[in-house]
Length: 310
Length: 199
Image 1 (tube, helix red, strand yellow):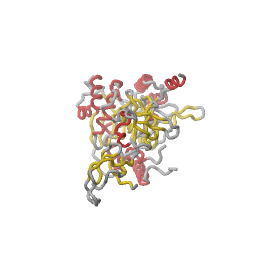
Image 2 (cartoon, chains in turn green, brown):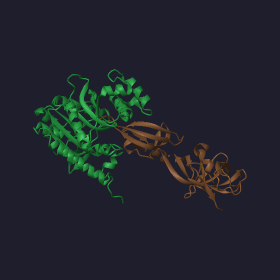
Image 3 (cartoon, chains in turn green, blue):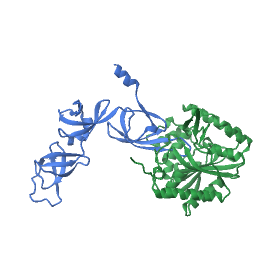
Image 4 (spheres, one colour):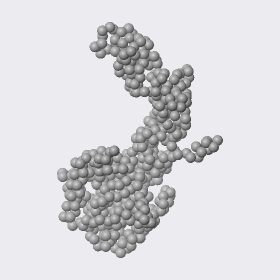
């Protein structure tokens, strides 16, 4: 019977060091540590994220895919800047870089936009790495131009599908929509060529998720991701604070879910009520701590940083 | 007929979530085995499963990318241990040592394995819809030299080699001192001579 942890004890100690340092970092920078529930009656309606359901007596609850909605309700209640270290759950995501249960650091900065949050992220990673790190920044649009000579604002869907078929042999791009084609190219072709810490920012507005649309360019959202050697570490936004727009996005999510044969999710009315009551301008980001540990320790698989895995 | 309808209507399928090495699936009408499965998801977008697949009929390895969550038809493939009996000029015959049931495999299914097949030896036979599509010989077989140049007596220390034809028709490189009639141990995966077998 194999009962021993997967992670070496040295990795378990390194995680403890990282968590201690994260807490010191935010405590000294005026961020309040919070703790929100893992089980909630509503969940993320994003078409690409699957939530696990849990039956608690006669209630059906969802394991949270991130603490985002609950933390925004705290922000609307006047918490000021907050951070949380905890677990999140995404059903069906399993692989070298994925486990359905994983660790997240999520934080929100009142008064920041996504650029200021990228600056703070650089400082945090440098602090946790115990050495100077180099960071580069590239817009989503420029990334595709540089890596593949593709102009994603001009290219037609049929042309994009042809590029997918050429660059990813064995793929079936006829089945993919525009954003799915971009996901395929980013995940399979571009990411493997990315080196070092790299922010990708200004995602197409069709991939805005919960980010604010850029005030100067309505074709992009103020969203960024941080990669290290092509491994996605973090996803952040200038947060959408408009309740009406948020409702429109939730409804669009549900229409996309229906098109994909997925069940609709009840809209989180409590989040919308909080936005209605007023959420100050803020920026927030989620950083995957398991992957960050992999990067800090130069490990190959998420298995090596998890104590146990089913 | 009832059996036929049951099997036709209860066609199994696998979701990409169930993909793992060794899983047998149908692809473009051919049974295939998954060698490697990688889950790829950039950020919040569409997830994909990139898999390396071996076509069990042709042996060819290919890359395939599925949208995560898609379903693929399962292949009715089993790999079973069978005893090799004989070759009738067209088919190679195998027997299940427990049920005594026999299977005839054609040259396509046997492929290069025919070079190492010796009666009574136990092989892995891959059955697709009940018929052989691939044969894997044991990792090591013992075969007799039926033809080779005369041995150089006492030349056991030198490194030279010469070709030797074995009872199955296979030609392997052997040390110079070996003679016709000697039994050799061969690694069938590399096709290399391992050692002499004392009679």
